[in-house]
Amino acid sequence: MTSPLTIALAQFRPRKGRFAENLARLGPLFAAFDAPDAIGPRVLQLPETALTGYFLEGGVRDAAHTAGTMARELDETYRGAVPAAVAAGRTLDVVIGFYEQWQSTLYNSAMYATLGAPAGPVIHHVHRKVFLPTYGLFDEERFVERGRDVRAFDTPWGRAALLVCEDAWHSLTGTIAALDGAQVIFLSSAAPARGVEPRDDGIAGPATVARWDRLIRDIAEEHGVFVSYVNLVGSEAGKAFWGASAIAGPSGEVQARAPLFEDALLPVTIDLGDVARVRADIPLLADLRTMLPELQSALQRLGQPAESAAYDADVAPAARDAARNAAGAARPGGGPPGLEIDAPLVEQWLVQFIRDEFARRGFTRAIVGISGGVDSAVTATLAARALGPENVVGVRMPYCTSSADSLEHAQLVIDALGIPSRTVGITAAVDGYLAQAPGADPARRGNIMARVRMIALFDLSAECHALPLGTGNKTERLFGYFTWHADDSPPVNPLGDLFKTQVWALARHLGVPEVIIAKPASADLIAGQTDEGDFGISYAKADTILNWLLYGYAPAELESRGFDRAEVELVRRRLESTHWKRRLPTVAMLSTTAIGESYLRPVDY
Image 1 (cartoon, rainbow, N blue to C red):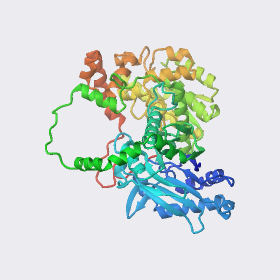
Image 2: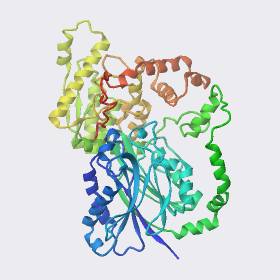
Image 3: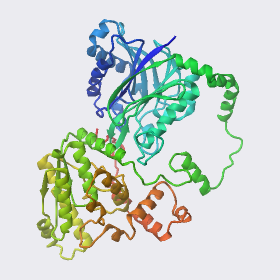
């Protein structure tokens, strides 16, 4: 006998910190999932922190709700969206992630509740996230407390369990849920996308998509359960949530997958009878139950202090390489991920990033300083695809010594994209200042030009009601090859995490004119100047060395792998000597509410 259950994966893009606004957006989802002729129960699953956004930092305490309040808010929204369904006695089960206040403590939680019941909402279970990432992009344990339990619970259709994001990265949590009788594990996450290198595994999207795909399939197959996974979409402070929500069946197969980077409602009907059938064929869970008493004693032993604490004084390079490979940072054979990119994915990612960031800031138009170089050409192209060519203003800002090719190539980009443009000469402004500083050397003169260009760009942004877009790439940022509080001033920068060689690859994919891609990169501040001439090393070599250094490989390790010692030292020295240019101004902290340290409110919230 079949046991159908319909789960709707609700990939959701919240407005950050706007709880009431996001809650109202659930009404259409409830209505879209309402099906009077539906067979079997229905569950609508939403992501982690679905109604507030994830990276709230100090704003967590403002966004937190009790589970009871959350359930009542959801119930009222459901009743308002589908009154006929409620009158007919149709209820809806909902899984939702939220910041919770419980017993005067803040948690990152997930709740399973039934909406539309005659006596009001029914809360079946609240799971409080056990494993809180506090590394890399994350600082979660600073703002919420850990949960202490993983368990399954009864629902109107069977038995389920809830996990939140990193909970699932620890295989023991899925084991506990399955041993406790879960037929379906609902996994909700706010997982930012990372990794743009091409892959041959057949799974479209960032590298993190493949990692999560493998994770949910492994949990499902090992324990003979369904795993229903929903991830946020949208962008928060430059971190893009990629969606690609999916359901894995008890044999480990992915039964449905939502699209990348887009809001989506994907209903999937599963047969709960598959759980019993798969477990009968592959009794892994039964084997585990048989051995559980012995394994429990082993777990208790592991929890006791060791009799001795022997350790190695240092870790050999081979062991470090193995650790990096195990962490997924390196490729087989050692070394970091390569610099090749999946250009169509990068385009999709950055176009959506620009749309999200502009919508969050309330802008519909962009303004880009177009220099005639590849970085500004790529930025303008992405902006035109994200916002429409009519909403992108290209600005040429020549100085009297600027190359004629720069003006011509900038116009080539403007014409190819069909965007409105301005030409603002900066000679009079720069020379007016330099008249007071006749001894200024070329570096000072270049910095003055760069800062005057930013004055013009931001002034025109006010006139055009357009947000300035930055054009700096990752190599320039790491080398400190920009004018402080000039090139780095625009509040949104789509290229800042792409090395120069990756920008060239993206430019070819986007159809930037080859004459712009092929010419030597130059800041065009001094006649005959080139970037690589200033660096003393090519971009190709610099990017490769930087990539290894950023993944934690020491200069000596690079030399042992055949890199030139002088080139490694040149890159290391530039990287280490320019950290100050990548930081905000240092403020003397005299109170407990220092901005950015203790008073934590994200700039986009």
